[in-house]
Image 1 (cartoon, rainbow, N blue to C red):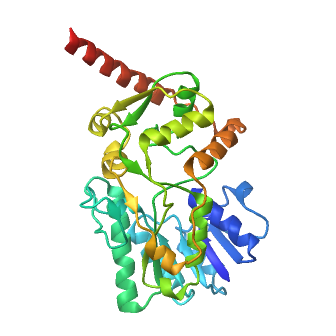
Image 2: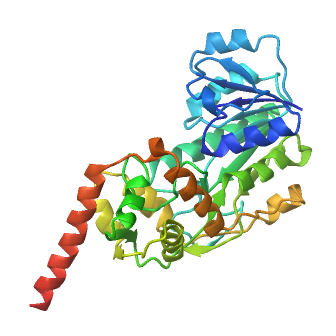
Length: 338
């Protein structure tokens, strides 16, 4: 198989890249080359900015692909560019959408590919929906061979997956745990969520590549494991070897008192209970099984981050904000009880 990834070094795509190389795939990555240290041997790098359409067109002028996948498209205009570049050059074009595009709030917690797409809380999700609509129109009217993939919360060894964190990532929450400080969990922590290790995601994705039954289809790829947010934070604390001191705060309050986009990230996504039905993926990729349980995967992540200080990015602004939120709740409780 001959494939081209636009991106290819991010959380989701890096595991796919590694697995494809071991399988002998002729893989090309088109990106700016800022993460060359994350490229496995055997990958063909086409170094360019995908937004420089003329440069990219010249690079791929004599190339044909079985699969082209865009991991970094977020708006329809970017897919319009992709269509101009790859029309007639690939047998399959895969777009990475998002499970956050699904109906929010849900009318049924069980999510299938038939769940309506609608998210009034998050512009990111509405942009992904618009991208899907554009590609489906191309498929129906032009026969452009598209496959839409919807990941949910996918993680790797470089970042601890969380619900509430600052703009610099999740390390500060882990640091608070290590310092025996309280950490914020949105809501009461009992809503259901799904965490998927990127190596498990890669199995499903690779099974869709070159799969004639996936053309024109939308497919979600997640683990089958459902966890409460309380269980997620407990697993992280256990991996760190510390006691969890959780403070539960409503998502609406967090959105109202933070500069972070918690309206989108929480109210439009993580605050909702979701359970994914992966029956369609398993019909298309019969041997797909997500095998990394979250407590196992996050332990690997924690060990990796603790061994790599460069990933431990301190976020003092977020840390102070957490303290203020906890103090405000304690003050309100004290005032009411007086």
